[in-house]
Structures are given as structure tokens and as C-alpha cells.
Image (cartoon, rainbow, N blue to C red; front, side, top):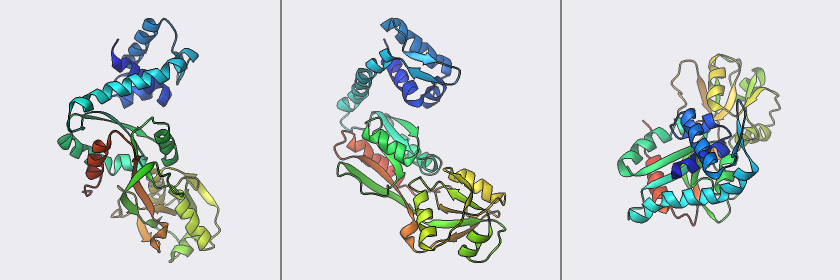
Length: 288
């Protein structure tokens, strides 16, 4: 039995569907499906409850999963044991959406040069969901927004960038930030997200009471709505935001305490510290 079959099973369970698991592993859905069938034949039991859109683990699969994860983890760490540089094997990295399109492409290019034997497996998610994955040892490190509370002492973080709060608008009514927020439809960056809390705090501090027309946790989508003159929005200046666009006006909010801080978080006792160090260096490469 190929160890990669177990890896695919774990991916299906964690991502909720064969299609999503296939994309995460650069495989076709048919290939992942065949791996699962081979495992079911090997263990002589059904491992997944399949439907048209999702796949959920059976009780037998849930019983198998902890040992399977341990085996896969140990297998991929064997390369690191052999290679004295510690820069080989599989590394699971969580990343928020703006990091996926902003910082990671350049970092991945750097890693390909400095650590060609490293297999970087990236899991997208929100800051709070990725931190939960980190706590449950489903990933090795995460690029997230620094939470609005002190991290436990068992975690280390490295600041990657501070993203100041800005007001995005396009052909909007009003001159000042306050006037634009009051006189135009407000597109709210999810007030429950760690990054969105900064905008909410600014409105509270300035005693600006407005009802959002839209609320979503998707900064790229908010950018498009503003460009289409659907309203104004308070958002962090994320990596990848085009402030030179003729269809966007941006005004920086002062003071800087409303900035969103992007960090690389990892366990203090991580056995992959060498990889985390090199990854951090790659992530700090200036954006083009």
C-alpha cells in the first residue's frame, strides 16, 4: 500500500470532498477516488460516505484516522532525518486568502531555490480556523492576522507586515472619511473576523453609527464592489491591493493602532524550526 493513499484519505476528510482534496494534491478527482477505493479494498471496509458534493468519514475511517495521520507524519519526516539541512519533506502551511495571492507566490519562488526538496502543502482558511488547525496539529505553521488576544506562550509569531486601515471609495459623496462613511452605502469587512475588528473599533471610537449594506469576509470582493460604485469600505491595505487603480480612492486612517498585523505563527517546540526560519525569510522578501 502506497503511503500517499493515506495522505489522500486524510485530505478528503479534512477538506470535505474528493474534488477539494484532489486540487490540494495536484491530482484529478478520479485519481484520489481510486486511492480511496484501494484503501477500502485493503481494509475491507467503507471509509467514506459519498454524495454528489461531499464525502464524510465513516466510523471505521474515524477510528483509522489518528494512526494514519501519525504514519503519514512520520513518513514525511524521514527525509528530514536523512537530510542534515532539515529542509526536505512535506510541510503543511495554513494561509489566509490575501496571503495566498499577495505574499506566497514570491515566497514559494524563493523556497524553490533555497529548499528544492521541500514539499509545501498549503491550506486556505480564515485566521481563527487556521489557528484552530494549528492547535490541533493539522498544520505546521500559519499565516494569519494576529488575534485580538495574547497568544499562548506555546506559540511563537513573526511579524510579516502591518497593514494600515484605509477607506476605499469611488466617486462617493462627501469629503472627509466621516462624511463618506455616513453619506454612502457601507460595505462591511466581516466584523467577526480578526481583521474586521479593527474597522469596527474605529467606527466605535469615532461614534459613527452606520448599518452595513453588505458584510463579507472577502477583501478582493469588497474591492470589486467599491470599484463598481456600490459603496465605501474600511479595509486593511492588504498585499495585492492596487491603490493605483483609477477606479479606487484610498484614504489612510490614523492613528496606526487600527492596522491589521499579519504574522507567521508556529509552535515553540516545532520539530520543523529550520523550515519555519527559511519560510519566514522567504515571506519577508519585498513584494514586486
